[in-house]
Length: 399
Image (cartoon, rainbow, N blue to C red):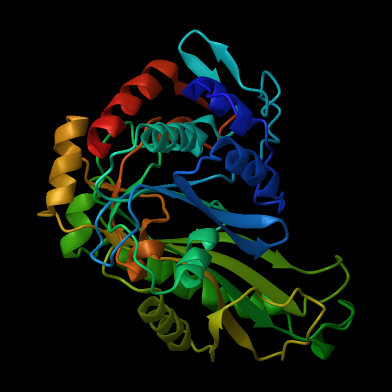
């Protein structure tokens, strides 16, 4: 296939609707990228994740020897929904207005993907690499870095470059780390009845009130907490707890037999989901509510499909994006900062694939083009000039 400019390749990638919240498949995009990177010097692996989702691995240069040498460029290919009425054009048709390339995923993070793909293609054509150069394209990042977690299992014990760039939009700041995001479901049981006879039932919403109070008190307690990694997060140096949604009841004249709370916890590097789950259960029990924590990470059973005892309070961890931080004295961090002209890219409050790759030995710097403040919004865009500047800097890092 003929070589494309970074902007033209970005347009091709944006044209694939890879919205992960609606389980849109990424395989058609993968087919295109595999065809585009078809070259005798590029090794390709496709890792099936079910439902048309896949992780993609492309590598050139010598094969890894187990010492972690080389460079890995990691980006996700899925995007958030583009259903907002404020879009001024088709979200999946890239359009350029002045310096802005506009389209869903243009900033987060298909611009980085396009640049990384073209850098790999150019390196394979030129040859002469002394260590592996790889590109990992993950699926389902936007619904909890699920694809990268699956990749860590799929890759196994094979050699992999430890020096890793996760190209999330950081405005080219070389970022040390990010908070994690633990997603939880708290289901509180009751006993349904006709509201004309309230003594025959137990209102699950009322039973959830002390749970909500415990969550509020825990949230306020967490605001005052600091750890050594708090210095990475100047605006919010504490772990964050959010009560996001409440779902209960079926009709105005029916006593609710179940109340489900959706809760998110953004934990600091060094804090684990397992430890926080135990802390959360203790806080709710202190409010006089007996708690059961469901083991493992799974989705709660939809209401109505499984009975919930009227005295139940069941906590289910539905996903855990691990927090992450690279050692501030890391030579790789210093190298990226010297290239990016950045000396103070500390931490970001959103999750990335970096934490999922730690079990493989990857030590990531989060560094990419684009402003995160325009991601996940109507008319998402990235600066064409910034794309060009970042491409040159990434090529320097490869060299």
